[in-house]
Image (cartoon, rainbow, N blue to C red):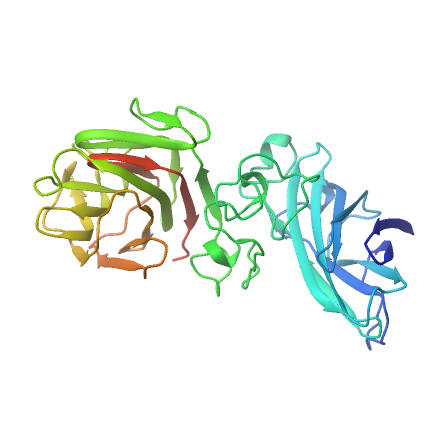
Length: 392
């Protein structure tokens, strides 16, 4: 029995069992809170050497206990929270669980929250989700980026910039470009609903995130990275492409971007901003094929367009087009979704409905795929690039 987690109005004791404990099969009323850990089948349970448990009562400060599991977490196990002098007739608890390997790398995490009662049957289930690219978790390098499914206190693994401003830094946010202060995960696949392309179907995952905090050499061109933005200033058409971080087939790529201005007179200038996804990191290459998703300005109209790129050339007219206002000084969120032979180009800005242009091509692309950022006659600042898988 371990004493831990002193909350603002209650003291809790904690014990970990190899099987379900507390409440009992008939769920007798009790003040105890049984939290069942369900490990991920994709992680070797014998690699888990440390558990870090965080507990918050009624939204108060999160208190932390670290301990070594007394047995391998090869199946559902439970720890029992026993409150001394429960704070009220009912109250809220939020539990977070981080599992580390022997090298100290964060391998998988989970969380659970609920309203509980001193005279109820209080059960929570924390499903542990593996980190993207975690592998077997045997080394520090296997662990991948840190993330979390519930808000975490600043004294845990969270640190650094917070791209989406939701209170959880990039290092522990699995939706790092979509603000979700209190994440939910309806399909329990480890990817919170806010950035899950299909919240009813488990299996999607975060595969790439670039906040442009530093110049890492992954993006082509001599464009400056400053103030956590990649700045493209171009008279004519240009791209900055990533030839190192490849995308799988069936993927959604997203970026937030701001057009500071247009080179030339708006009444006579053609301009655009957008995303490219295709077979080469050189969209203008002689053998490159792919799809270009752009917000376009012309003297006669503004549109959201899907264009085929074939042999390095943008094919006109677009295969799908919707009326959409192009403006400077506005932050747009753009998404380019490839799902089999179907493509969707999506744009939205605060306070306005989402606009989409959708089309089907004759042949689905094969992996690897490459991402490029596109601009024509603009000063455009790209805040981020993020990608998630889309199940076929």
